[in-house]
Amino acid sequence: MANADTTYTGHETSGSLEYIEAAERGDLPLLPRERLWGFWEFTYANSALAIATWAFLIGGAVGLFVGPREGIAAIVIGNIIGVILTALPTCVPAGKYGVEQFTMLRSQFGPNGSRLVYFLAVVFLTMGWLAVLSMMFGRSIDGLTALVSGGEAAPLGPKVMVAAIGAILLTWFIVAKGPTSIKFFNMVISPALVLLMGWMMYLILSHHSFGELMGMKALAPPFEDNTLNFIIAVEVNLAAGFSWWPYIGNLGRLTKNERTAFWPNIVGIFGAAALGEVVGLLGSVALGNSDPTIWMAQVGGVTVGVIALGFVAFANVTSMANILYTSVVGLRQIGTSAIRGLRWDVLLFLFCIVPLILVIFYPTMYDGFFIFLVWTSALNSALAGIGIADYFFLRRQKLDLRALHGDPATSAYRFAGGFNPIGIVALVVGFVVYIAVFNPQTLESAPAFKYLTASLPSCFAAGLVHYVLTRIFARGRGWGNYPRG
Image (cartoon, rainbow, N blue to C red):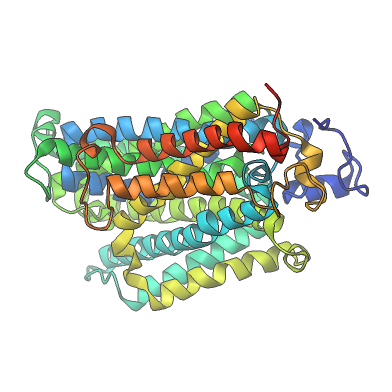
């Protein structure tokens, strides 16, 4: 394994300005002394990422299936499991080695295979997330202006579109300034949003006692079987936990060490997301609408509504900044030399073009949020299982940094033509298992779903297939530089 202070390109020397700039962009590992975040700074970053309108929407979606008593249990169970299984294969190696997440994936899928995973997990999904979050921003601004003027909100009106486009452009400007700008933005917004969530909870409880809230029913349960409705609510929250897979690894590489990379996810991602979801759940059932841009305008009058919607709107920008940064850092690693040669701000803007198009021509995508979220878990849960099997059980937490950053044609992680067919087969198996157990589009499920969910069988199946096939085939062929024994 290469030492962290080794020169990897033959040009930059460790500690030099050129090395630091390349490491910030993900081209080289970040050395511990060059990393920005300690425990609380990473916690702030995770909290800012997790406390956004999507948390309130997820809580509102939970309220469609179950009431607050079962809903809170589903939020805690689903999120804590999903976040732990996601942080282990992404943040732990990133915190240890300072390596960019999709560069690290070369050890699991090969250089070309990591490109395939990037386009599946980031290009399609992140561009969709940026569009959805910007539309959430737009709806929040539209609701805010409607409160101030006394008019009616227009969720598909021109103000929403203009504000959504503005949110994407503002996000581009923030991320173009680099991770230091994101760090400052996180540390300002995150504590304010935690206070706001406490305030919203207080207002909800001032209108309804805790006992009354716990006795409320689901808004629109699809099945007569309450157990099935509860497991769907758990699955929604597992999907929420696994949805962090493409993003938190590249945030974790900015932390000082493995512990700092892992534990803030429990405090920040889980704690903040659970808080936002519980508020969204209680607000939705108490006020009869799962859309936070509607019930927040009703819960405390004009002043409270304006403040709440304003904070929530800019929380979306914070989340967008984090996922845009991590995604484009990954794009530089898997892209061609032409992509890598583009200026940072230009590459960021090009990445934002598709979300801008979606906002303009497909604004109803916002209304498909719930289905979109659950579909992502069919991929992310399988990726998490493969990562856990590969890094912890097959590689025993050891990576070769020279092989990761060296010439792909001669890399020890080249596998077969730059692809690891075992990892790809495992990913397909995990995806197939998921949709065989649960169909997010129709909510149809196999009997096993009531006892196992869909994300956990997908995660386990993908990890098991990857482990077994690697033990049988990869070591005999000398693929992947796996340790013997």
